[in-house]
Image (cartoon, rainbow, N blue to C red; front, side):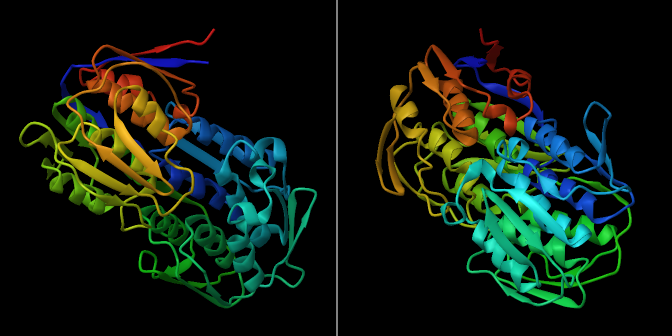
Amino acid sequence: MDSIIIRGGRPLSGDIEIAGAKNAALALMPAALLSEEPLTLTNTPRLSDIATMTTLLQSLGAEVSALQDGRVQAMACHGEVNHVAEYDIVRKMRASNLVLGPLLARTGRAVVSLPGGCAIGARPMDIHIQGLEALGAEVALEDGYLHATAPRGLTGARVEFPFASVGATENVMMAATLARGTTVMTNTAREPEIVDLATCLRRMGARISGDGTGEITVEGVDRLHGATHPVVADRIELGTYMLAPVIAGGEVTCLGGRLDLIGAFAEKLDEAGVQVQETARGLHLARRNGRPRAVDVTTAPFPGFPTDLQAQMMAMLCFAEGTSVLEERIFENRFMHAPELTRMGAEIEVQGGTATVQGVAGLKGAPVMATDLRASVSLILAGLAAEGETQVNRVYHLDRGYEAVEDKLGGVGADIERVPGR
């Protein structure tokens, strides 16, 4: 397996281009199943998860073409659509379950493996199921697969989510576009990726309102047509690279970055003493005075502080002056990066869903292990300012969510390289 090696101590300077959002693209691609006409996505990130979704759509009968060096995805589902999403593909990526709603709306049936073979109660697929059942679907679990049918077609209804699930909001919203009548979804997720999906669906002829507010209304239509849609900028990649000059020193402009995508995160950086300036080119980042200050962080659904930036923020707070408390309220077991940062000299105490970080003057490079996508990049960020050499192993996680991180950070002055696995 590949490793990333970072030799710390070099301040950063220059521009980093922010890619299209992975989480947005992975919801937009299944929307192609809703129409017989082509859907073209521009500003698509070049990631392994995008390749996995491509393989899944192709297995369902879609034609998918990667254009302009993978930046554009052209998809067409004008022929017969296969309604079975096989485990061998779905197991690789949680977002594969987003074909469930579109398949049910398009074909009236869907057989979709549970990601990773998990039981419904172990991960929140039950919320997706409850939403689709409210639209008239019948869903059963058999041998690790969800078998969903809509023998009388889908019908608009009121769907009340017990919590604001991004995936469930996306699945039910896509299914409702072709349902008879009006669907009103309450306690919906408000993330920018939800708004981006709704915008794309409107371009395809869907009648959707309220996205971004917590209550979404979908008036079903008979058919959707093709469209071209640009993928919104990746707010998680944006936040990650915003932290790079804060940790390493220097100044960086994140091209294409917008404050409205990252408001709560930017507010915490301001509180920590970081200068965040929005320009016509993107967001410009620089420290104000020396080391950043300690801040307390609690993760929350959008527009709160993103759970997907918690690990990266912890890496920055390892260098901050004072004591910080991070409370993780979205996912369990999401502090697996803390022991690895401790190997580098960080002072972190974890108790349940809370981590207390005592800032130190500096870290020392060490061999560390990436345990998940966001943990892997947090270790890379820490390595930017650590004394000596940091080797981050098992970076296959990294390639699911960040394209060419070594090129982007190397382009602004970091001493970083990828070492092929043996």
